[in-house]
Length: 333
Image (tube, rainbow, N blue to C red; front, side, top):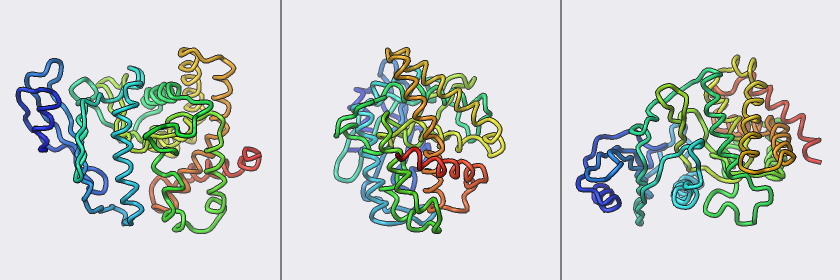
């Protein structure tokens, strides 16, 4: 089925006009395009995410393997499941794009999504100030509180990654093998186990970099996109990755405690607002705060195998990783 016909049938649109290419997907698996639709009440424009299952991967850093290809295909199925079964639970304070429908055959997957640009989220950023980052921390706190699961069932979260984040150790064996031997490589399994065995689990976005947030013009509101790696985890994993994506090393060194205090105060507020007890909220915040440096070390482990010369491999990141490694003996008891 062609994209135009799919969109027209899904929305019962009178007309569909292709407005242009937005961007290609990572490693060349497809693209995002914008369309104008006519005759649909309340909808003027939509975004189509098109994935080709038979596409040959072209990783910009040379990480080509059957394992990596299958992980990428799995990630798009997870994203479909997210929009089909989970996305509707997100509130206005953890704003995401609405999904109008999907189409899948043996060759491709189409996801028809709300155009966030057309509803006021048209700003994109590569970096943020400390104050600008707070709205994203609010989004993450609301998201993590909504999906908190103190005693998850064995099959939770159905249809999503059993362990969220795109750098999860079990999905990155090639990158682990590429690491230079040292304490971080030696303790990678222990770090992973420590995060997995945390008492309080939630859904993590799994790729919460600043580029996956869409801002309102005045930067007071934000929505998130790209849910290919959403799955079970702890909130600190998203927070660590987000902060590392939008703030430079010096800013992080100066303000990390303030930023964590802000996130956890928002998390506490959100949990209590949805009916959780103050004792439970305090327990969640305490556990995830203690695990923050471990979560940071987990991503740093991936980075040192994937691209050790990456600009995110900073002295601050190594300091946080060392802190996480020092905390392991007590946290692993």
